[in-house]
Image 1 (cartoon, one colour):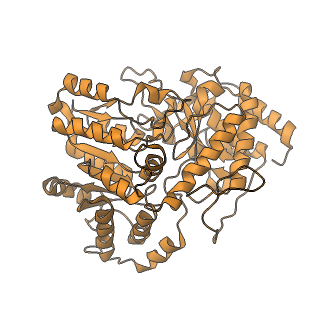
Image 2 (cartoon, rainbow, N blue to C red):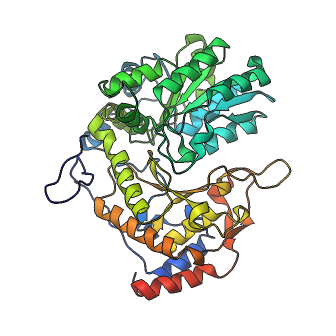
Length: 482
């Protein structure tokens, strides 16, 4: 949306909607939050939602639906096979992406599973601009390996580079030559890149990378889960794209790929997912995976009510006003925190505002999970649940040593159409306080460490009594009741 000007003050992002349904929140006192964190074994995923004031863990499945999305849910056809809801969804996706064949699934990681099972064999390589945790886990669990080829500049947290998710084309050519094209399962591009700060990929880079892959006969796959933010950045940042519509840019991108998959918990503002397959033969080869793992081919594990909502959500994702709010609120949050001296990932990307944990708490060793510790501290000092995106989210090396993440971040996700500007200002205030008291934060260590995706269900403990000291300092400044 165009930025709305103010007469007597600098512009702030505006909500292009009005609120019609609300959900009550409660801010527990800091000492109670400390007890809740102990009960959760210092893993924010284990917190109860009722004990959280501002939940910025993710935007997955927690975006607000529009009135038209909710109304559409009443029109669902709940037939087990041959549901008209499915055919409406298929038609809508074909209209937007230009790909006729669609495999439904219950969410994005189910699509990753289906794609990996179809393509990955032991010893095969999957090339990515950057990995996502579940996308990588599916590949490695099948004996494959992942090569991340994001440009070196994309890993510099603070810069003015507009498309930090771009793949390094020289690295891509070198990787293909080294591994051999026949040993590469597929090239996967994530638009935008979740684990380096929701940073976008340019259309020019997507085209160049897929052209190289196509020349070698390598299948190309797009993870479109965060596509709506990436579309915003292509339109506003990329040369020659300003006058193109969001729908035009979407089709240009889709035309580059053999498969396009998405999590409807992000793209479409609902809960579901699916994979669009360009080649009919490949589509039929992959059908069995849906019926084996997900459900029948006309629902794929999704609720048909959610499918009807997603059909409307897909169309809303083609509306520039709708997809602008997330990036604009994130930009405001990032810019204000930078003014406060907080080390942020810049320029702001999609999905959320990202804090550089290594710079905020340089005294915490990587092996003690600084991003995880700061995420704990953020809940203690404001009731805010963010998400660790660093070494804690990585898998260990084969020899059992830590695989130190290239970037160590805390993500403050902005679910779409959920938070107000005043809630955003509260978050900015509490993060500034935490920045000024970061020396009080210590590390974490595992007491129970799952072998895979350990950040979801692992149990941790602090390396000292730093949580008690941090809360005591917080109470001095804000009182017992906050």
